[in-house]
Amino acid sequence: MRARTVAAGLVVLGVVGSIGIVFAQKGLPWPAGASSQAAAPPPAAAPAPTTTATAEPRQVVRPASPVSDAIVVAQAGGMPRASAPAPAPAAAPAPSGPPMPPASVAKGPACTNPNALGVSRVVEIDTTGGPGFGFEHFKQFDFLKPGEVVLTFDDGPWLGNTPAVLKALEQECVKAVFFSIGKHATYYPDILRQVYEGGHSVGSHTWSHVDLSKKKPDEQKEEIEKGISAVKAAIGHPIVPFFRFPQLKHPAEAVAYLGDRNIAIFSTDLDSFDFKIRKPEQIVAKVMEKLKKYGKGIVLMHDFQHGTSLAVPQLLAELKQGGYKVVHMVARTGLDSQPQYDAMVAKTEKLPTAGAGRPINSVVRTVE
Image (cartoon, rainbow, N blue to C red; front, side):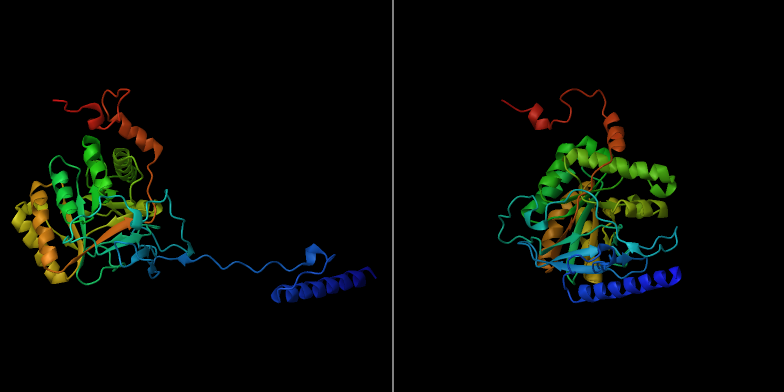
């Protein structure tokens, strides 16, 4: 008897559940007084997008800004890493860091040169997962159109040379990406602030420009993070999550770490070799020769080099004459530093005083 009662109850529950599913599918309200335990669950949310190490990249076109015809978001599809097997499919992590100013309101002086080379478009990069750019090492994201170039400068800021590069870029209303060395940022924070205030993207290039392939993983992490801390301290703002390895050597452990930190990795398409050539006219000739061969690309130069500071005005003139277009890369989100590495960088400042951290022009000024 008891068994028949239990069986009858199960049948009733099954019927009620079926009615609930029908009501849910047709969008009808559940009858008043019905048992909440038997109600059908709400329709499941769409599953989050997943990525794997072999996923195809996504490109999203956003509305145009005043200085661009399109803003392209490059989404990391999970960059392959030599040191680890392909991960199981999982939802992409949320971008970290506070938002950066969108491209349409990026800081920088207004362009007053009607004949300037200018910026043809601005691309915004979603750095989730640590995507790589530059065909010398990374083949996944080919976002440049024929005739487009991205200008990048390493190893600054440096006295005399970086300001000269900034002046040439400003005269032609051109924006670039700067990969600063952390120690140099502590030497010349005012100069690096000029880079940021000029509307350029400021990324990092380690603390001391050592070859990370010769360092242990914890030493690699310290070099990366101290560089980020020093650059952030200099500009007083979260930096763009863009990073370039010294000597373009990419140890697998450091690549994996940057992916976890959602920091994009930059190689190059066209290396100027300005650290070897040094003569301005030869630097320009080398870049233009490679541009004519490849038709487009991310150009690697060094604002640390005096020859480069003299070459940039002529290079911009050659680009304009050749009909090339400059593309500026910005980040969807900013990258904040980590407190423990901020403290390490602060200890490198000798004899700190109560007025430490003020810009030079607020402390010393010419009165006569």
